Length: 199
Image 1 (cartoon, rainbow, N blue to C red):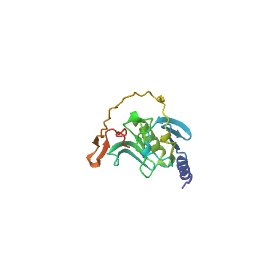
Image 2: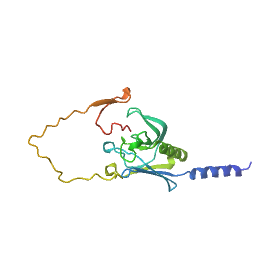
Image 3: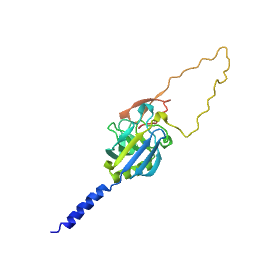
Image 4: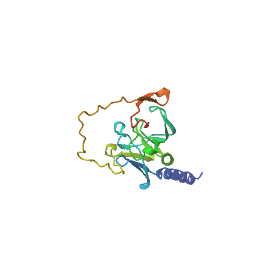
């Protein structure tokens, strides 16, 4: 019996696992961008939406541990989370979103949102490389988010009209509406700017 083919096969098997691509997914909350590098070479830069202040995306270095191609959020009214890559035990994930108009600014409940095509590309890349060869790094802070839009001009000491008896402003109570699946009913204020944000 010849041992050479067996030894050669084992060497190739070990070489194949050692040569698996290393994927680094870097999320910058200050710029609301994701950079994806493969073996140290930057391949993609995509706009994202991380968590709003009260649902901040946690910063740190993570090893993703679970992937689901067709996930729906039980916590947020069965909101679709296509191509989910879960990276914290609390359930934070990178996933596609239908709220593409919000990309480039904080808008989620803690997850990292991507355009659907970008999420599918990342999912396929991580699936091929393997979770063990993927690292997710979240840095910056959504509180320090810097927009590319010009800041509104502030007017110091704006002119005020002198009125003897100014009219009283009526303060209306915000209307409430029920959102989503009746199984997971949540009341949201109609004037809540994040009422469209699910995950």
